[in-house]
Length: 68
Image 1 (cartoon, rainbow, N blue to C red):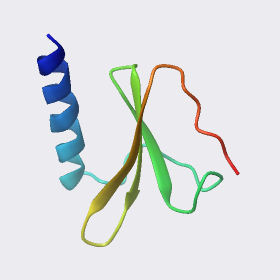
Image 2 (tube, one colour):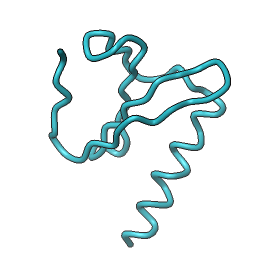
Image 3 (tube, rainbow, N blue to C red):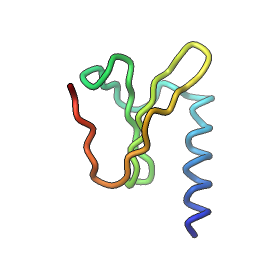
Image 4 (cartoon, one colour):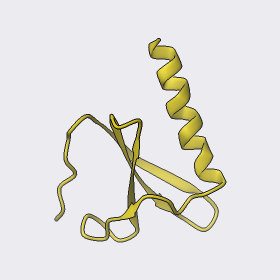
């Protein structure tokens, strides 16, 4: 079961190739950072570059991302 969850998470991350600018933009954390949830358990912090999406962090559960 854990491997299936990781596979779904990986598939979701790879789907940024089709629609990168999803989620909420969080410039209060860092300019250009976006946050999107995955299956109500993981928050994905990422940034969109001209040719790629860079995943910065995967945060599990209720862990909060602090703004500076």
